[in-house]
Length: 68
Image (cartoon, rainbow, N blue to C red; front, side, top):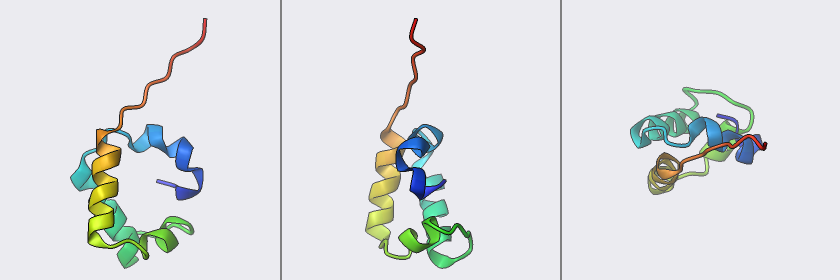
């Protein structure tokens, strides 16, 4: 997950299980998982913020249609 490409990552994390997303965000926050951008952003998130983000991304569906 790369925060700097916020719109580009929606397709890669949309519909993921909320528990998985929460675990990853908490890992960034604690330093267990490292990323130059996500580690900085995640440190500012509280548990409720993480739960809200995970719920939103898990409920999001992303589809792509190829133009004719």
